[in-house]
Length: 263
Image 1 (tube, one colour):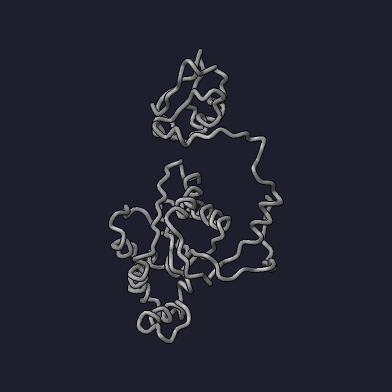
Image 2: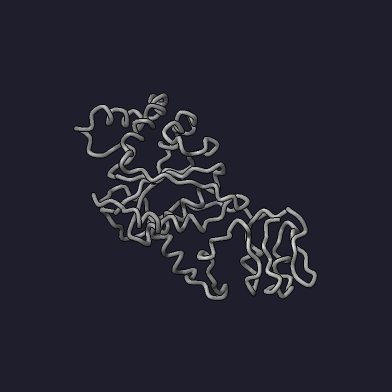
């Protein structure tokens, strides 16, 4: 059994049963579990009008429970759309670095992010002090594709002699990097996207690097040698260079039209 149901608080309204997609809850005089089919999504806990239902895995985390009204959204469609319009990739950064408290604020977005079957297996690495060591490790893996991608060759040339280079070929002016690991790619991408959007509300910016991700694609086991504390079943699905932007933009630019098929 994975639920704790307070018989004194339960009013047998049936709302928990109605949102349980695993048919794990029945109603008699009070709500009760039918078995162990629960996959801990938390819907029953979130909808109960009296707070009678609690997931056992969340015991001791009562400070994370927050009441809100679903009828009062904190942001309107037009405001959110305008915010999305103003988001742009940033590659020019100030020298000022992001402190740990600010990173923790960003990670709140990931904390409240959905994941596959609510497994919450997403894990992050913030690279700062060891960023250069990591980038050398990445190059040692992806250099096998130097002849195919000019940017990788440029990266190698930069590592051998950066005195003549204006920008780092992969980091540009970035000094900090967030890596996202998970067993499920969708969970990792959603979590990092939410964290990225929060970053813009704090005056931060950044961009994603597909070349850094190549290290996982080419040799996952060798990449994970740099992260002995992370389960090797997790893959690096996002590499986001982040910092305080040196440049700001004035307007949107046109995008290619998206294709939509209604079937």
